[in-house]
Amino acid sequence: MTSEVSAGPALSEKPRLSTHTGLAMVVVMTGVLITAVDTTIVVLALPEIERGLHVALSSVIWVVIGYLLVITLLATQVGRLGDMFGRVRMYEAGFFVFVLGSLLCALAWNEGAIIGFRILQGVGGAFVTANSGAIIADLYPAERRGRAYGYNAVGWSLGAVLGIVLGGLIVTYISWRWIFGINVPIGAGALILATRVLHDHGQRARRRLDLLGMVTLGLGLFGVLWAMTTLATSSLDATVLGYLIGGVVLIGVFVVVEARQREPMLDLSLFRVPTLSPTLLASLFQGLANFAVLFLVIMYLQGPRGLSPIHASLLLVPGYVVGSAIGPYAGRLADRLGPVLPATVGLGVQVVALLIYAQLSIGSGLWLVVVASVVNGVGASSFFPANSAAVMKASPPEVFGVSSGMLRTFANIGMVFSFAVAILVASRSISKHLAFAIFVGTTTLHGHVAVAFTTGLHAAFYASMSFMALAALLSASRGRRARLTPPPPH
Image (cartoon, rainbow, N blue to C red):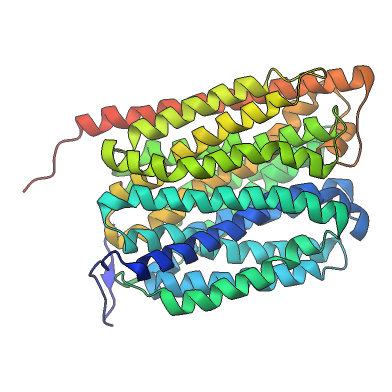
């Protein structure tokens, strides 16, 4: 992909690794941490949000999906803005919007307000996550990026841990509003530090935003997701079918539009890079398989096992803690051996974790949940830094922002649909409305109904295993593609 470099001055030299670089990495990790907190913390608060704001059962799921969907749609566009106006500047703008959205979510007064403010929060989250990978690529030379992405994975894991623990504590003992309010002082402090230690070092490039592509993909994904979430609580009818077909058609229109755009939302020319296509697709299927795990396990613990939010959350903490410790070492391994082996092995380990989860029953010891979460944490922390390093290694430097945004787009598409697929598959052996109520934590199960529902969860875990295995195959194929690709001419 060609680009026109702006007439303004551009700093192209890589900064030397120093204390300043370390502080910059801390700021990037903090941004990833607070966005990760908001990905997990809201799950445990859904019942209280539903009751406190009188949100309809079928709408409360959009408090989570709306946030993820807007990040998905904006990831490549704000990455492109980072290439145009400076990745650090866009990262800091994202911090500000995220903190503002968090404050407004804490003050929300009804269903429309909480969903709308979550979307605003997602806009800020998109600026932060899409540009963080590119900032790391600017800060560190290629041979050190795997380790840097490993530390970034630590930020995500710690954020997920804090989200789960704080979510359980805040919802149980204080108020759901503070799950958003807690972001304000943390985010404000990190933003002040970011303005002091982060500086743009990448070249500026003039790019065009693909508004038509963003609209067609957004409406297409919304149509399919609306149909899927509606099917979780009701039967198929003409309206649901219309949304489903319309969504699929619009996604097809999006593909046609992208092929004709000069600077598309998803730069199809990047797929000509032999190792980039399987890297992005591996990220998509890993998200499709793994993001549902948190929700499925919480469904099991709060439904058939009848645990409170705080007790359910504590069982998942060890996996995230171990994962955060593994991340930097996995990143170093990716630097030494290349990204293919650590990423593929990580995905294989996650398949094993899903198999363990699929053995859960009404009488299982809760230690089995802890073991599965630890195995899953090890696998995820091996995959993420290696896969991120693979994208940046294969991407031309002038489109780091676009490539980082594309990686988040593919991962988030998987995450968004993981949420919907999980509830559909898990509800196959029980009343859909009852399954959905368990999913958002508003009821529990006992007796034969609990056994039937656990059987449905098994099916969902096995479905996730198939997606994860496909991601592993895609990841492994990069080794063969790399060997078959001729070296560039000198």
